[in-house]
Amino acid sequence: MSTDRTSTRIVLASRPTGAPTAENFRTETAELPSLEDGQVLVRNSVVSVDPYMRGRMDDRPSYIPPFQVDEPLTGHAVGEVVESRSDALPVGTQVTHFAGWRDLAVLNAADARAVDTTSVPDAAYLGVLGMPGLTAWGGLTRTAEFREGDAVFVSGAAGAVGSMVGQLARLMGASRVIGSAGGPEKAAHLRELGFDAAIDYRAGDLPGQLAEAAPDGIDVYFDNVGGDHLEAAIGALNPHGRVAMCGAIAQYNATEPPAAPRNLAWVIGKRLTLRGLLAADFEAEKDAFVAQVAPWVADGSLRWEVTERHGIENAPQAFMDLLAGANTGKMVVRV
Image (cartoon, rainbow, N blue to C red; front, top):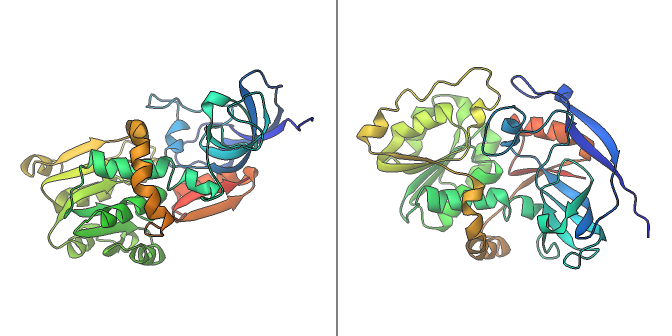
């Protein structure tokens, strides 16, 4: 049976200066080659856009290679095998893989993983049971060394990772969970998710709002923002507090080097621990993550949200909207 091999994909047209614009992306079509032994043809159903991708648009050393100009962008996706030359992944298998930003992809079977989308929606493997979920779980339990009774502050708390961190902390016995998000609607949403207090950082006086939300201080700060949030958290952390540094979305589009928090000297006196993290740090513990988190997803104890856009040609706008904070939970593009 013949299969259409015309792939529509998003390529990097140019490197952005500051915030990405539509001119930095281009939609192209390409004819895909015939399969070789051990390969599959996957039709993507849903693709992910994530904040870390902004760093890949710059040509600079990082923990992951940068996107190349005039080449397709990549990222996590879920799709169906529509043609196969691999016994491990027959036609009809749902898989997750890293060839997103396109509707059709040829993959080595070893680079795809079969998933069950009959009991869990496909988008869950890009969010709560995917990289964001693993990042939240590992960052909280391993990097921040969360302990029952800790007071936890999360920035970017309405996003895919932040919303998970707050809920996991609550389910694991935090004494208090505080989240920061942009706007009153997102702050109200955090309270619906079970956060004890929600800060609208756009209202100003972040240190004052945090002091009011956490009168006894905080023990853990999960940082998705950096900048003023990290500075406020350092001020609020109790002695021997821990910071899990996951992201710094406040400076992703900055054209000048950001100023460090002005109170870094407090790290010394308070004997604080600041540790960076990557999702890859916890890959070997994925089974432990799923074993603990999947039951909470199944019984509704852990809520997960998706902001969904439609059409692969709209992936660039979805990504730009993500960087501007237009998402609640995981931002995905339904192909």
